[in-house]
Structures are given as C-alpha cells and as structure tokens.
Image (tube, rainbow, N blue to C red):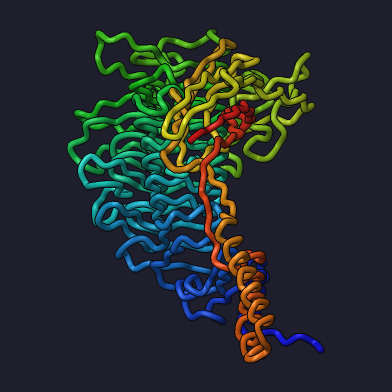
Length: 640
C-alpha cells in the first residue's frame, strides 16, 4: 500500500516549498512608456507624476502652465516639436530640480518663460538646487531676475538659448542665499560646488541680451568647483558693476574654453552709486579654498568689443579682461583679447600695494586695442606681455564684424593665424564651427593652432597627444582593525609640463568606510611629481559576517524522533492491545521529528561571527583637462 502522508509532514513540505520559491527572483522589468501630454495627462506636471524612472513625457505644441518639478525622477520631459512653451506667472521659477536629480533627468526641446525669482534661494526660468539634471536644446527666455540658477548642483546645460532676462522685483538676478551680499547672475548663476562629485558643463549655448544689477550679466560662477564652460557665444549682456560677459569669483577653478565673448557692457548707471566698472568681457576674482590649487584655464577664447561706460566716481578697469585675488592661478592660452575703445583691454588689480602679487600667466595671446593702437594694453599689476611666451600685440585683422553670421573670424593674413600654442591645456579638437583644430593655413613647416575661437582652413596637422601621467600608491596593502584608519602616499608623476589639474578619488571601500585626500586636487605646471596623503577610515560596523547552521538543535530534534522508536517497539512486544492507536499517534510523530531535524526547514539558529575581510580598493586620478584617468590599486584587510 502507498503510505499516507500525515498532516505534520504535509505542512513541512509546504513550508519547504514556500522557502524555495521565496529565494527565487521573479517578475519582469517594466517596459518604459511614453506619456503624451495632453493625450494621457492634462498637464505637464500630471505627466511627470504618472511617470516612472526611464519614462518620457512627450508634450504636444502649445502653452502649458508652470511651475513643474521633476520630483527626483530620472525621466525625459520633451517637446514633440517647435512651439512647446512652459510658462510661469512671475511668482517663482517655471521648472524646478531640487530632489537630487541626476543627468538622467532631462529637459529638452521646450521654451521656458515668464518665471521670476522670489524669496531666496530662487531663480527665474529654471531653478536647480542640490541636483545635476540635463537641460538641452531649449530656449530659456523672457524671465525676470535670471534664466538658470544653480545652487550646489552640477547640471549639463547644452545647446540652449538663454536670453532676454530682465530686472524684476528684486532688481538683482538669481537669488542664492539672501538679498545682501549675494552672488547674482543674469543668464546663468552657478553658486557652490555640487554634492555628487560631478562638475557643471555649460557647452554650446548662446547667452545674450541678459541684464543684471550686480555680478555676471551673461554668467556668474561663484565658488562652483571645476565647471567646464566651452563653445558658448556670450554677447550683448549688461551688468552694473563687474563681468558683463562672465564673472568668476570665490573658491573655484573653471575651464573657460573656446567661447566667443563680445559686445557685453558694464553700465554703472543702472544702479547708483556705482563703485566699480571692471572686466566687461571676463572678470576673474578667485580666492583661497578647496579648489585653490587648481588653475583657472582660459584657452582659445575671442574676447572683443566689450565696453565700460564711464561715469564719474566709478573705477573703470579692464574693458576685456580683469583679474584680482589669486591672479597667479589664471592661465591664458591662445586668446584674442581685443579692445575697441581707448580703455586698456587688460587690468590686474593689486588690492594691497605692499603685498607681493604674481600676475596671471599669458601664453601665445594677441593683446591689442583697436581703439588706441599706440596705448598700452596692460594696466595695474599686469606687466607688458608683448614678445614674452609667444604673446603678441597686433591688429588681428578680423574678416567679419559683430553683425555677421560668424563674428570676428580672421583673415588669412592675420598674425593670429598659425600662431598659437599646440600644447595649450584643454585645447579642443574642433573649433567653434566644428572644423578640426591645428591646421596649416600658411604653409609653415609645422601645423600650428590659431588664436581665438576659429581655425582658418588649411592642411590639418596631427593633434598633440594628451599629457600623460602615472599614479602610484605606497604601501600597496595594509591590515587594520574595525574602527581604525590607514594612510597611504599617492604620487602623481606627469610626463609633460602641461598636465594641469588632477583630481583624486577612490572606490571599492568597505561599508561605512571613507577616504580622504590631502590635498584632493593636484596642479602641475612642470614635470615634477606631487604627493597626496590618502586616509582610509573604517566604521565600527562588522566588516562582514558568515552564518552557519547551528546543527545541534536540528540533531536534537532528529534524536528525539529516534528516541520514540524503542518505546513504540517495546510496547509492541508486550501485547498487541492498542497497537493501531499507538502507531497512529506515535509513528507519524517519529517521522516528523526525524525529517524536520534533517531537512533544515524548521526554525534555524545561527552563529554570527566576523572574520578578516580583504578589499580591493582603487585610487582614481583624473586629469581635468583631458579626462585621462589612471588607477592605483590598494589591498586593504579589515579585521574584527
């Protein structure tokens, strides 16, 4: 006969089956969806609320009310064609990213308009705080106070038009912290470094016709880490006091690469009394801090035709370029810095005359004043650069003017054609029009890059290899106990003198562990090696634990089940009275106890113990200019 399965055994079998299914992952990935507005959702915000990470909110042409907030989602919100307008009502920003959004949160192909900065922190068109989204192929226009305001974020702002920002309720611009002593910006404000380790990218934008009371009319970069500002056209912006084109200040080290900065104006009459009237094109006033070891790179820009409107009582200095503070950190390569009035194009301000001040470093620039060719182009603490390190002072012979399709292109006869420095750090592979860099237009023995944002067509030469380097870590391994720290020496050795800044980071850390570099940024202007001290600190949590079955409990159950057998057998020998009853009761009990003890499906008991764990750490050294990254391995053993 087929033996009957008792109730207790059936329960155990079901329990084991349930456990087996519980540990098997199941389910399929949700398909990404496209939410149509207004087809599937009546408003853009309703579409965002419906969306999950990876989805797209596709907006039909029309005007849609703001504000909208991405709410931390990694989604794409996009216009399905031209004429998609996100419109505010001048009672706050139109679009907000303030929930830790990453570059996967994308806003594209829309127009953002009629926003207004309110109580700080705030912005006009788009407000980004503690987030790093992507804003691309859009128009941010006609907002009050500022176009895009970023506080402690690192967005990618790519190929947009940012224009027509005017003074609003607070007549200032983007409001960062308070209305007193705030950094402001007309087109874009960057304030504070990001919290996620990323760096802001502002690439390929047209920033024009923005107005601000204080600070940068086109862009204000204030204590904002290591942002990349590349291939932008910044024109016709105005400010009351400093940096009508770009103002850089505080603890920051931006890369300002191949931007066309022209016809921006410092207008001290916007707000009285006017105290300063400086740096209409580019104003750099960097200070000490976390990023003070990094250079401010100004490479292959064309800065021309910017103006200081002279008023009584205003200090008017540097129509095209002004520097103060840690001026020695500023490195200028292959730029056209060309004034068009009688004002000196360049000024370096020494705040305390008795303090020794090193001026900015100029390499292969054309520094000239079309308005007064016989006057000095340098003033203040900047010495004359003509004939030093490839710098010239000559009419650049522009082939086009400010109103042409490609403003301030060069003639072939220009002294700035085939006259730059091929080893300039951060030298882009293409010029502002997408033409290959380093072309031999004049038939020289070697192809040489042009100064400014354009490259005159000729015979392309090979691009210079990026500056290389090595990284080593000593010691290569260490053993510590939980809660302790280990220190390592990280040595970076460049192969060429133009390596520039190198950032340091680490990966592969144990849980609850941290790594700290002192310093975390190394800057190279020679081939000499530099050292940083890495400290790895572990927390008190168990580094790792292993769990093993405490088999004593299971064996005891099994032995208990076996112990019933003699009792059953013994009773059988004494007589057959009640045999069937006893077997029905005790027999299944014996089997159940024995099976449960050996199966392990009953209640487990564990011994948790810690043992030394070995981790493979890596030091990441990344060259800011080229993006080249090298790894230094470390073996770390953590005991109890």
